[in-house]
Length: 415
Image 1 (tube, rainbow, N blue to C red):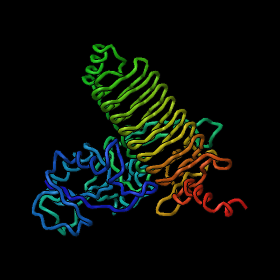
Image 2 (image 1 turned 60 degrees about the vertical axis):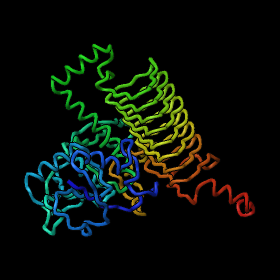
Image 3 (image 1 turned 180 degrees about the horizontal axis):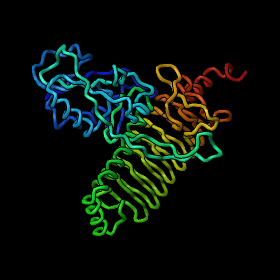
Image 4 (image 1 turned 180 degrees about the vertical axis):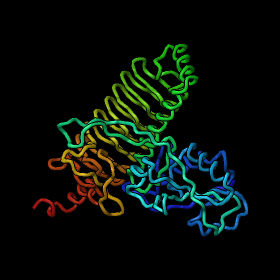
């Protein structure tokens, strides 16, 4: 089978890069797609539109390169499409909660067509034709899973906050919030849900229990639940619970807790750090007592001591200073909104952290309000009146530009 990749050149703020180049589950999205399709496809063609595909009288699959999906989703789509033996297009039921609650906000790639939602993923048994593709409805097998509890004195909508976590995830990545969704709720959260579903079968549970007894490890910490690469050093006092994937050349220090996360290669997690439902990509560094909850660090980034990230995303080669806090809950009770195509739009979630672009330097002791973004190449230095990020920060507002202008023209800024 040949795969046809339709290039989506739209740049995602605040990274200012197309979705295909951003990290999902510690891989660039284009590489994740290639790996998922590797069992089915031997060659590929890149085009700007489906209409520009050359005549290919052979079986092929076409997709836009800003889509996120996993092996289980693709397997189910191809199973149904091949059984029909005609051009098909992926579709979703309006009752699919993972799609309607989490995938639809802040995007246009998944859209209503008649009684279903469709997206830009096609199967052609005999090459691309002008024949109208038949919608193939794929059930994402969404499960309602709680992750946060709002006390009665904090909000009128009280109780457990939940995600509809799909066992077959699918997203059209068009906003930074989708990078968060692909890595945490639709990524490692989904991996955990699939593992829990598998453990529900007696044979799988028995194998994991036997491994725990053999290794003298807690049920969630044995080698069937925690995959560890080469040359990994884990302090005996650290707690690592699965499902967790740890790469090569990783150090996890005393008292650190890593739960249901992906840790890339060449990562240093020092003493007392907390990493839960998060992705820490290759060559990242977490000094002592840094805390990540449902957050993503792209490669070569650092979160300094006592910093706290919740439901947040940090781009590559970025630094977050000590005691900096990314808040995620709007205390005034208004819907959270973030920028999408130049306009503020509701994110569709009651809690959401912030996003830092690539090559940023965020100083110590700064508080970032929910759903705010800091553009790539920005430097933020804490100062009087500049300790809280209440609005999105663009490159023109970077402190290295402001301070440079002050040094060149002090009279403009001292009146």
